[in-house]
Length: 324
Image (tube, rainbow, N blue to C red; front, side):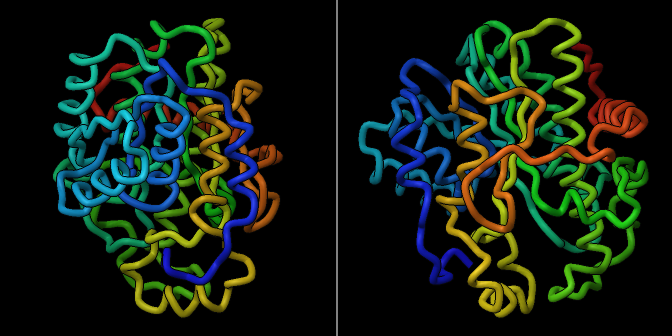
C-alpha cells in the first residue's frame, strides 16, 4: 500500500529542523520499507551510522542497495535479525556488542499486523514476539551500550493507534505467554478492524506503550539519563497490511485520512533525534495524520499491575533477568 496516491506534507520541513547525527550510532529494526526505511535514510542523511536489523532476504538486500543509492555516503551496517527467533535476536545483539562499545539510539520499529494465529519457533504468538518480546530482549541485551553512551541516549518504541482498541482496555497475560497458535484463530473483518488477528495486534501495540512507561519509570528511579520514548505513525501508507485480503481497497477508501511513510516516520524520528524530546512521552499525530505531537497518556498505559505483569511475563518468555 506504499503505492497509494498520497502526498508528503510535513516531513521535508520537519527533516530540515533535525540536528546532525554525526558520530552517533542508531540501531533500527524493520528497515526494508515504510517508516523504518525512512528513518534509516534520514539518520544517514544527517550523518549518523545506522545498524539495519532485518531478516536475511532478497527484500533486505534490495532495500540496502536502494539506501546506498539514495545516500551514497551513508553509513549502513546490515545485522541479520529474525524477531521470530530469540536465538537469532541474541546473535544479533552479540554481533552489535562485538562491533560497538556505545549506541546513541535503539528504535524498535519492526512490526507485523493481523497475521494468522501461529506460534514462533519459541512457542509465542508471532505478532507478540515480533512486535514486543524480541524488542524487550534486544533492549535488555543492548542497554549497557546505551549506558556507556551517556547523555541523552534513547530507546524508541513504535506503537500505533491500535493500543487504544483493546476491548478490555488492558494488557492480557495470555497474549504474552507461550500460547502461540491458540489465541482465537485467524478469522477477521478488515473493514471493522475486528477479529482475533486484530485483537492480538492491539495487544502488541499496547505492550509497546506499556513497555515504554515501564522503562521510563525504572530509568528515572535509577536516575539514568537514558530516555524512553514511544511513537506511532498514524494511518500511514506502508506495507503493513499487504498480506490482508481487502486491505488495499479499504485503505483507498480512507485515502483522505492516510499519510505517506515519510510523514508517518516523524514520530519515531522525533524520538530518535530531537534534542528536546521528553522521556516517558508518546509522540504521534493528533488524529490519523499530521505532525508528531505529545499524545495524552491513558490509564491503561500506566496501570501498575499491567506494567508489573508485562515485565514479569517478558522476562519469563525471553529467559533474561532484566534489572535496571
